[in-house]
Length: 289
Image 1 (cartoon, rainbow, N blue to C red):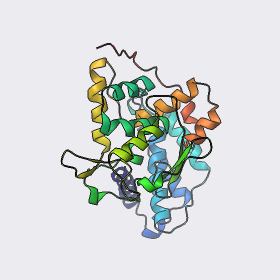
Image 2 (tube, rainbow, N blue to C red):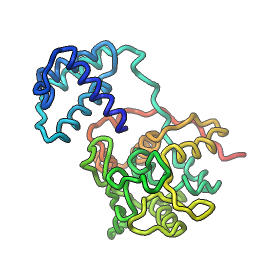
Image 3 (cartoon, one colour):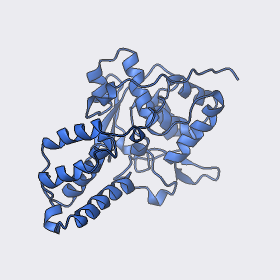
Image 4 (cartoon, rainbow, N blue to C red):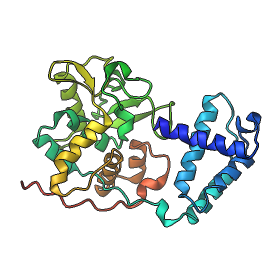
């Protein structure tokens, strides 16, 4: 995700160079230049792609200690870009994970991936918000991913808070997710408690660290978790999932069970109402071997 944002910023700086803009024009960048840049995406990409590029520029600007000068006109331009987006700029909706898939993981004892899968599903989380790219413990960055100490104690309803140091929408400001107990074999709070106990994790350890076959502490990575899930689900006819499929699956799960949309939005720290866009029905899932 960080590499992607860096590429977005570099692309903007390259464009600024072709427009003969000076450093003072691009940091901070004013609304007119931002709008001009946003229009370059018209006819080439979807509006969401243009928005992601501008969002990366905003994060970079604020990180440099400069004021963000964007305005409401940008939203109108994003809408215009969306209307002119070519069909090739849209990808097929991703298949949401279902609770039954998680239950099957538990029956097959996919222990090192199951706990994270439970949390991502019921917590409506992006995989990259809780799982790193490297299994190497010294490379784990607590400013990017949570520690055991970031998981709060349950309140009187059994709900726990989880501090996310960095998220897709809030960046390095981070956000707080709220994990509720579930009457399910895949209850994320029960899974986390067992995971922490079995791996003898302390407050300063990565939330999803685990002990390998020689008792060396390693970090569960996003790729390992997703690949393990795909390996067990693939033979059952389920299309390959990505880390985002857990988030949209959890959101769909709550909405289909009648949880009010505003509650789902708050629990999933959604910033927009895009989570109300209908997701494709998941492939029928059979537990028959």
